[in-house]
Length: 63
Length: 271
Image 1: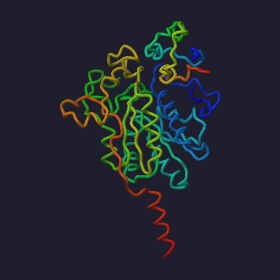
Image 2: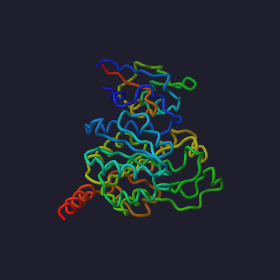
Image 3: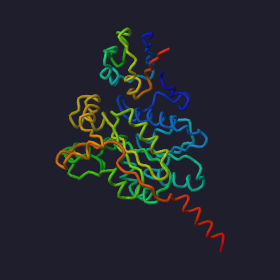
Image 4: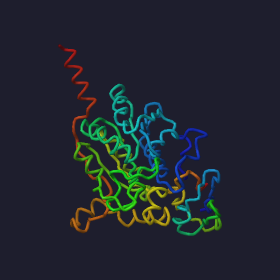
């Protein structure tokens, strides 16, 4: 399986850090008030970030 | 595969007005997944709300939507359902709107057992107006109008709904994101009044006054306090003190209001 691709819609992100805290493999980190992908290769596609983001700001593409 | 929320959202409306970390966005996503699972048609679905943060939800979704008077969402929704019994009617709102200002409409909608689904986002506070305490603020907690702690006992919305006669009552939290859509979908499929209480986080006006360092702390507290209904059945009253029982709390079959009313019309026409 290919490593999933994470898309962060920066215009929607409000920097609540829910995605960063719930990611089991520490793919994401806060960069000021924005979530940022720092270890894309570690993503296991669990969808926790997309599921919990209250702002529709993160998408996991598994294609 | 990522769920395509965009097909149910009105273009150009995001980002929404809710604060960073507000659970209403999580509930909105759950609601859309539930609507998708039930394959509700956009033109045959009405989403009704009153006033408040949670009641801003219909503005973002591409259905027939009503943003009505404070606390009166259930009354407007009853009107829609009576006029068009084939319409799928969903009501959304917060605790202040649903069981404080609109407490009367809430209990009577439950009593009538009219076929609609009410998603009540209980964030323990009046968020939009500045964090005044609501009937759902836990005893002892702080709000802008109770800076020394809230002396009032708390409403248990699910118990209130069961007592008032709702035939489907379920409870979950913003932490249990996958359970939200499953319970709402069950509620939509249920014939009769379905109440889904979602305990939600308000980091801005509730969390910061009550020693939650972040929204993640609020989520983790929901995780710690939640007890599934099957496990709760094996626990004593003392063990359940302060816990949140989640899952389907009540389900029964009872005549639905629109059908009963159709009978009344038939009887009247035979005269």
